[in-house]
Amino acid sequence: MPDLAAALRDLVAANHILAHEGIVDAYGHISMRHPERPDRFFLAAGCSPETVTLDDIREYDIDCKPVVADGHPMYVERPIHGAIFQHRPDVHSVIHNHAHEVIPFSVAKAVKLRPVFITAAAIGAEIPVWDSRDKFSDVGMLVTTMAQGHDLAACLNCSTIALMRGHGSVVTAKSIYDAVHTAVLLRDNAKIQTEAMRFGDVTYLDHAEITKSGGPPQGPNSRAWKYWLARCGEARRVGENR
Image 1 (cartoon, rainbow, N blue to C red):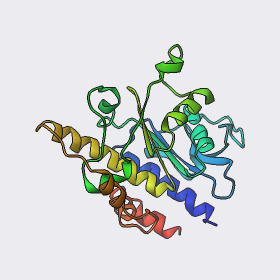
Image 2: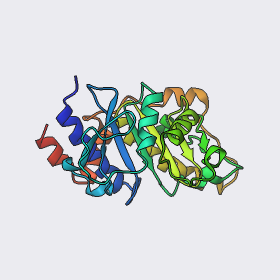
Image 3: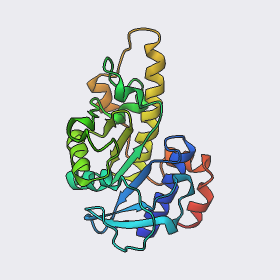
Image 4: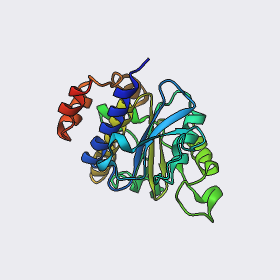
């Protein structure tokens, strides 16, 4: 069974990595399914990812209700996480972010976001776009109810990522390490694809290349995770606490 204390420290570090890499800014969040209670998950309280500490991490049930109601501010878009965890038993981490490089692909009708370089194969061949107007045109674009969360999760279906029209994206994975890895490469792929389209027709990765180039699962000792820890100044602190 994973060390819960170490996993929570990595969840804090993931917040810092995502902020340092520009995937999240003042907004956005990453969650982790409870390693011992699959019907619960951990998510920071309502604060900016760069400022998250262990004291900010809160435990929620699968319906997004706090296990301990302490009156602390909470992210209003918790249903993104709870609904996806309900729909996808294979998912153990969810990221919601507003990376600017990705958002154009959520509103452009003529082109889809597709993997164009080898390490971005993990984003998958099919990335659906969820449009809140389809069922919730009168309540705004934020995902603040479980009904909205379930509709987003249904759109995600078996994909790794779903774009949210004019809003951002959700990234899912089997671990927080894979989730961070995929979220960073999703942003990078959007930047490279946008540049490539300026030159004309684009050659995308084919199905075989996507299948073979997804790379090994990430983890606390993976090269990418250690690299991002070092970049955001977390490497020493996390290492000392393991």
